[in-house]
Image (cartoon, rainbow, N blue to C red):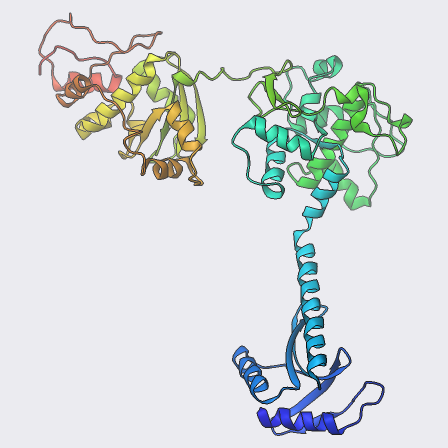
Length: 495
C-alpha cells in the first residue's frame, strides 16, 4: 500500500492539471486507483476496504506521506466516503482539515434536524400560541410534556402551570360537551366518548351538496378521491388521523352551539381569544371518571358540573389492593367469593387494575382489617382449610398479597417501573418488606390453625362476628367442611 500511494503521488506531482481536472487512471501493483477531486484537490476514493485495512492506511499515511491526508465525509445519501487527498503545503493541509470539520459539523446538524421531526411541529405550535384541541386529552398533553419538555412534575398543579406557559390555549371537547344546555340535552344518558359524540353531532361524511342537520349546524367538506371518501364514511376510530378528524368535527359543531359563526371569521382572527369560547378553554378532566376538571391557568381542581357519576365514589379507607393471582380472575369472581364470607352487600365495587391485580372497595371500613386478618390466617392454616374456603378463588397458589390503599399509592409512586402491577409491587416490597407487613390477629390465627373459623356471615350487613354464647357441642368432620365452604362460624364447638 505504501508503494501504491507513492506511485500515485509521484504521478499527481508530475502530471500537470488542466482547469483543476485530472482525468487519468493510475495503474499500480495493487490494482487501479480512481483519481477524483475533493475541494479542488486530487484525491483517491477508498472503496472496498475493511475497517482494519483503513486503519493500516491511516498509519502508513501519517508515517510516510506528509502531503497525503486521510478524510472521511458523508455523501448525499448519508453514507460515509473515505478519501486520500493530496495537499502540497502545511497551510493548505490546515485549510483542508478545517473545511472537512465544518462539513462534518454541518452534516451532523442536518442529521439531527432530520431525526427530531415532530420536535419542530411542537416548537412551532408553542411559539405561535396556537389553539390546541383534543378530546379527553389530559394524558395526551402529559405525553407531549414528557417527550418534548422534560420529566413530569410531582404534582398536577405544577404540571398544569408549567404546560400552560408553553401552550396557553387548550380546548377539550369532552369538557365543551358540558357547557351548553342544548348539547347537554342531546348527550343526556349518552357516553361522552369521542366516537359517541361524533356519531351524534357529526354525519359520517359531507359533500358540498349536503346541508348540515339540526344537530350539526356546521357543514364540513372532506376533499379526496373515492377511496379516501369511503374510509371517512366507514370510519377508523383509534387511528390518530381519524381521531383528530373526529375531534375537529365535534369542536366545529360545539363552537356553533356556543354562538361562534365561522363565516364571519377572517384569517387574521384568533379563535382562542374569542369571548364566547375563551371562558371554556384550559379546563381538562384528569381522568374519565374523576368528576373534576383542572384549570390549567391556575392549576386548581374543581368539581365538574356536567359530570354524571357512573360508579360509586371512591372511599380510600374502605379499599384494599389485591395482587399476585395465580390465574386470571374476573372482578365478578372476586366480588362473589368475598361476599360469600362477608355478606352479599359487603363489597360495593371491584376495579381490575390488570390481569394480576384488583382494587376492592368494601361497604364498611372495618371490613378492610377483617379481610386482611382472615387472608393471613387462612394462608397460615392447613392447606385443606384454605382449599375449601370461599376465598380460595383469589388465594390459590399462595402468592396472593393484599394491603390497604396507602400501600397501593406507595407502590404506584415508586421509582420502580414494571408493566404488570404484581411485578411492580414485588419490586417495591423487596426493599420495603417491613413496611408492607400484614398485621394479623393472633387469636384468629390460632382459631384457624386449630380447625376453626372465627367468622360468620350476617346476611345483609356483612359483619364478621363470633358468639361466645353458642352451645358447646360435638361437631363432625362433615360439619367442618360445610362450615368452611359456607364461610360460617364454628366457635366453641369441639371436634
